[in-house]
Amino acid sequence: MRLAIGAAAAAALALGLASGITQPAAAQGAADFYKGKQVNFIVSTATGGGYDAYARLLARHLGAQLAPDAKVVVQNMPGSGGIRAFMYLNSVAPKDGATLGMVHSGVALAPALGIEEAKFDPLAVTWIGSVNKEGKICISMADSVVKTFADTYTHEFIVGGSGGGSQMETYPHAMAAMFGAKIRVISGYKSGTEVGLAMERGEIMGRCGLSLTSIKATRPDWIEKKMINVVVQTSLEADPELPGVPMLTDLAKSDNDRAVLEVLFADQLMDRPVLAPPAVPKDRADTLRAAFKKTLENKDFLADAAKQKLEIRYVSGDEITALLKRVVSAPPAVLKAAGAFLKEGQSQ
Image: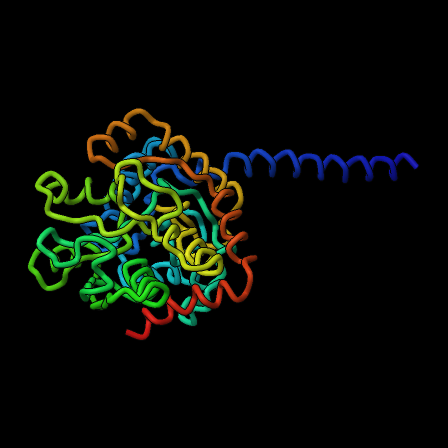
C-alpha cells in the first residue's frame, strides 16, 4: 500500500514539477524570443508614400518596446493594391512572431467583397492594431479643369491608381457608377508616390484615396503653395480642416447607395493597420500588441510623429476584428454592390 501511495505521489510530483517548469517557460518565452531579434516589417507600398512613412516611424521605436536590443527592419512589397503583401503575410511569412506587416487598409475587406485574388480570411490573421484612423479625399492639381466635385459632371477627371482593390481605384469607380461622375482611372503606377509624381508632370489630373495627413507628411508644399484642390471627401466623418468640401456620403442618392459607401469607407477606421501572420503563438501575439500600444503612447515616438506631421490615433487589434466582423455581416446585396467597384478596378 505504501508503495502504491509512493508511486502516486511520485507521479503527482513529476506532473507538478513539469507544470512548474512549463508555466514560467511559457511566460518568459516571448520576452526571451525578442532579445536580439530582427523583426521583419512588410509594407504593401513602395518607399516614399504615407504608408511607408508610418511604417518607418513605427519601426524606429517598436523594437525598444519588444526588447532593448530588438530591431525592426522595413521591407517594401508593393503590388496588386496591397493584396500581394497581405497574401505573403497570410500564407508565406514565418508564423513565429518575427514578421509583421502594414498593409493597405482596404485589402482586409477584399474577401468579403468577392475579390477572387484575395484568397485569405482577414479574421484569421493576427491583428496587432492600427497607427491611425482617418478619412480620405480626392484631389486635383490646382490648374486642373476639375476643381470641385460638381466639375466631374461636365469634365473628365483623370486620376492615377496602383492596382485593383486600392482606394485609388475603388473610390473613383464608385463615383462614376453612383453619381455619373466623368472620372477615369489610369492604372499601373507602382505606388501613391508615383501617382503624385505623375500629377506633377501633368500625366494625370489627380488622385483619390489619400489622407490630408499623408499630404502634409510627404508633400507639404502642395498645401503651402496651394498646388491642389480638394475635390470631395470620401470618408465617414467630415474633416474640420475642409469646410465647404462635400462629403460623398451626403451626396448619396439612396439609403442603399449610402450603405454601400459606408462599407467601402469602413477600413478608414483602421487606416494604417499592422498585422502578423495567422497562428502566431499567443504569448508572442500578446507581446506584440502590448509593445505596439506602448510605442504609440511613448513620448519620443509621439515627438517623432509630430516632427513628420503624422497623426497618431491608436486602434486596438480587437477593434479591427470587431470592425471586420461588422462588414462581413452587412446585407449580401450591399457587399455585392461594394465588391463590384473593387472588381471593376481589377479589370482595368
